[in-house]
Length: 55
Image (cartoon, rainbow, N blue to C red):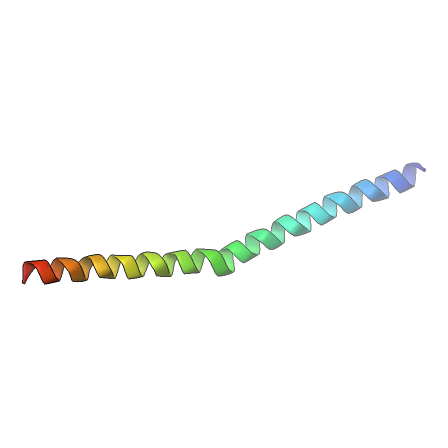
């Protein structure tokens, strides 16, 4: 019974670690680049608005 308990605990810890790594990878590859792109677009809009006002 002791080996079974160790196996269950090890499996749960491994599953949690794999899930956390997956979430981190998705955040780095999908979410962060999209936020950077959105920030870039907003910055360009601000610059364009300043150019329209100043000219």
